[in-house]
Image (cartoon, rainbow, N blue to C red; front, top):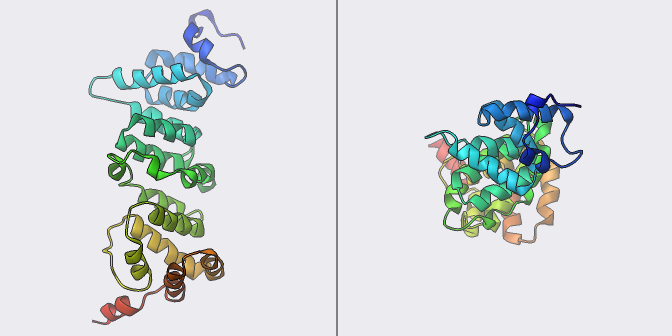
Length: 254
């Protein structure tokens, strides 16, 4: 494909593109986007290309998104577009930037895939990246803010695979400092120990209950693989009482 002279790519951009990695049509679109480098369309194109250019070009595009418009930092827009196509790279870059809001938003975008979860199966790869991502690698001083909206990922995930959602949620709660294990055991055993705040505990709890109703055998098989007898007992009670009991039941009668 021969690009007209007045649309020729700048030398630094051409050298950044990996040979054979960029579809020909995108080369032309990228050139056309140079005049509007922070427009939504241009940022979407650059998001697609972020994992296909060298590190210096990525940093330049990020700097341009941040500085081109006064009082309108569009770094997040570029990171969002990148996350859909390359969730691992975008999430690692977000953590490196140490911006809790961007980390949270990039994680959410990564989980939904390049087309924002439409159709649902386009999010499978991104959710796999989220599952493998260690939240504890986020610096401690910004970790609470960065994961404040993490529960939104479970809301989307539950529409795809409720069992996987429940397993991820419990693993998340147990391997982070989100909540004490003993209180979770009491909660899953029927003691209403936590208010309904729409957080990771609530979304994990909801996923476990739905899983118990729609796929009880699958949940039972999973419980048997756990190495924690007390947690096994609590989750077995939840499996057998997905509609509530003990304190939940007594309170509903009042």
